[in-house]
Length: 216
Image (cartoon, rainbow, N blue to C red; front, side, top):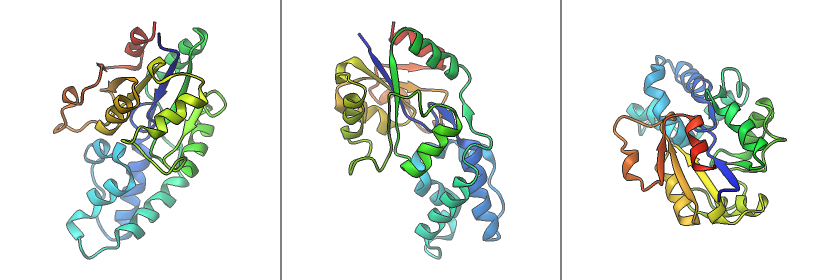
């Protein structure tokens, strides 16, 4: 029986792509480069700031300081964390439903805590989450299973009692290595060249509502 549902943040719990796309394009514009189309940026969002800078400035390598650009991106993003970010359609109802059934839920993300915590506060979720494990909570990050096992302890659940939902291969790998059931959030940021059906998840869901059938 599943007691705890754990979510990746970007591309699973919340649709953060609009604000991250704005930040990347702001960095590009500051370097006299044109904005990239949103549909080009969206599939990369789950892979973090480094991947976004590689997308935005890969054509300029090796003539740019990628770490300086990444820090610029994150600082711009920090000031616009929740301008356009919202929960995915159906996610608010899912969280309400889980809580009404007596399940707890939490967040395990590679996003650093100085971005994760204020974002969840802005979304009104920080006090409701049973745990919040960020990319710098432990020395290890996904796909290492340690963050997920840490989340289990915080939620007072065993790994086999947890379900982890994510939209990247690293999420599924981390969940499997931790001994959890795993689901791919197909509504998340998955590129056309990716094959989530080969990641080894227990299931693939098209919407947050579909997660309930794996809990009840």
